[in-house]
Image (cartoon, rainbow, N blue to C red; front, side, top):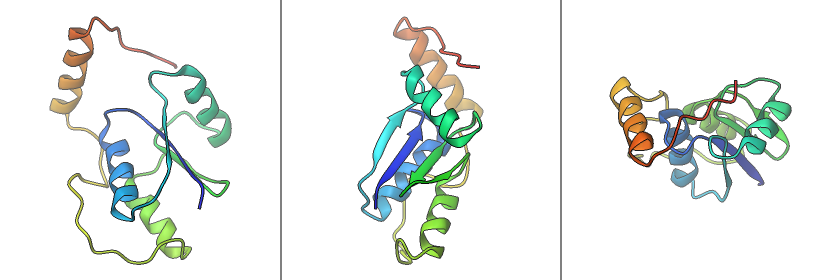
Length: 118
């Protein structure tokens, strides 16, 4: 199975997708859409929309999905089996306001400015 995951480095939705990949011990390409504008542009072109995460599995694009939705797709299409292993992050939600604030402070502390693609 070939998997490309268009993800943000620190995002609840993206961390949920990563957790599902780890839960099923899947190899995948983790594509940073925040620090590389061409990766973001590729995601938008392939998915036809600007929201993330997007996960491409064997040429099928799952756009704006949670880790829970990615897992449901893979199970229903028999790409993976049922797996009751626990994960250490929620797979069905984004970041809290506190997590967003922490990321903003970390970025500013490193001298960075927020990157806006749209």
